[in-house]
Length: 330
Ligand code: HEM
Image 1: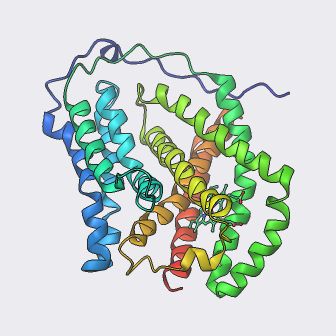
Image 2 (image 1 turned 135 degrees about the vertical axis):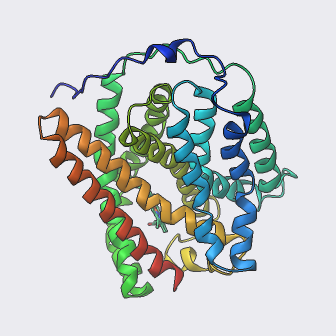
């Protein structure tokens, strides 16, 4: 088996080891990302109620999370972890809504939990010590295994997203492509491997994320960590939604299910527009930065590796725009 790839990790700056609640970072700066997440449902509500432009504006909330996660740096690890959760606001809001809004056993609405969650995280981000721990050694074997399961998921994701691009030619084409692909990815052994890879990817990603919260090196790292945080929450939301519909409610999770309620006019489904759009971008950015890491570890020149990564992320963003065009006009 090939040895795990590793680039040298620069030592943590000395200040990262003992800074407590640095006066340079005001409480307002620490509170801004979780407060932005708190108002996220209101922005989504305004989409169908006032103008679809609000659904585009909702993207500002994860953007604030990414910017804060980068700016806060390793000296404010708690606030930085909260900022990364803000990046994942779209999938977290969809997950909570899918889990709580339609059930009758527990008298709890997703929005109530949302408000409680972000008020608590505002307190977490702004109070208490922000002492950073000494940087731990990078778990190279786990990172290698994370890359291996990513390869399995990438093969599926390429087919899955091609399936969604086929919807540009109409819902019938989407269903035809999905029926053909299902004969492969729904074969019992294949589906089990895929679902296990997604579960491992999410859990190992969260473990790797824990160490990255304590390091800041560049925008490349911030983008990788932020897209990883988004994907962990996206997998949780996307798979529980698809499998709950299929296994508990016996629904065929096909194009009709996907487009039954318009994301532009239905008050509940509006949350799915930014959530799906960013999922494709996040998967592209995360995979592109993984590729950049591997190329550089294999001795490729930094400018070439960087350009390839940017090109792959740009291609994913273009694919996201096309997939959303097909979904929104359905
Ligand atoms: C626009 C974005 C997306 C939409 C609209 C979407 C929609 C769907 C739908 C309708 C299904 C059910 C498929 C079936 O019944 O055969 C599904 C399943 C799934 N999706 Fe997505 N998806 C999107 C993005 C992604 C991304 C970025 C990933 C990441 C790899 C992903 C991973 C999965 C997985 C693992 C399954 C379960 C497959 C199975 O075992 O049935 N999806 N998705």
